[in-house]
Amino acid sequence: MTSQQIIAGCRKNRRKEQNALHDRYKDKVMGICLRFARSEDEAKDLCQESFMKIFKSLKSARKIENLESWIHRITVNHAIDDYNKLKRRIDSEPFNQEEQPWFEDEKTIIERLDTIHLLEIINRLPTGFRMIFNLYMIDGFSHEEIAGKLQISTSTSRSQLTRAKRMVKNELKKIDMSYEKAI
Image (cartoon, one colour):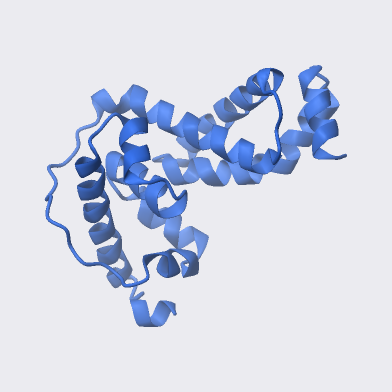
């Protein structure tokens, strides 16, 4: 079944196409949710809610060029919305605003860590740090975009990313993953 057939069927509330979409993208959506959630149960909830948003949004979307990218964006935006709803209850740590050096090629380290280790390290970050780290390092958002989505200043985004990087670096040291070993 093609993406366009799936989209057309989902817009008509046909269960077959909805199941096909879910089966095709459930692992990708769950992977995104695991990065943003604090626990597997929370990730499962985010995943289910994301699919509900995806099915609802399919009905009103005019044209979807790349279904996978569109689903990724819906899921990330839902995780951000969920974070914004809960952020009043988050007890965030104070952070140091000075920039700290990290790795020369940060994305190389992220790409070379296996998924399980990366998720474990990311899940240990405080919630705000985890959101910014995911959005900047993995999803490629700019600090300006992050600031707008999370309703914070760009300097807060930068400083929390610096702190998150430092925490990840410390975790990498604990598992003996250095820059040289990751290359």
